Image (cartoon, rainbow, N blue to C red; front, side):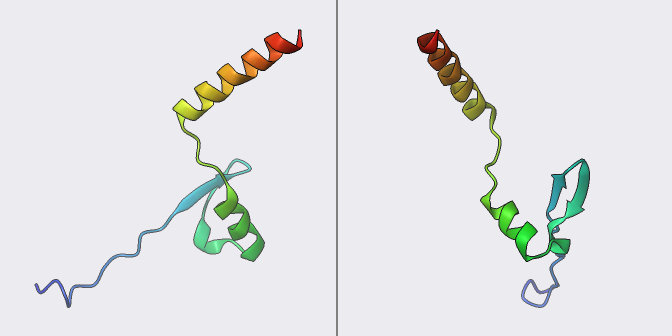
Length: 61
């Protein structure tokens, strides 16, 4: 089969919101804008943020 004539399968992105897993294609304009503004969780970011929080708490005490 020629790659130029081959049809591609649509890739659907899902998001977990309020305990429900929903495809983002079903989001309204406001919900889609909120989704685009979200930060992606990474373990490295959470550990450095936690360390900074502990350091600030020690300074405040």
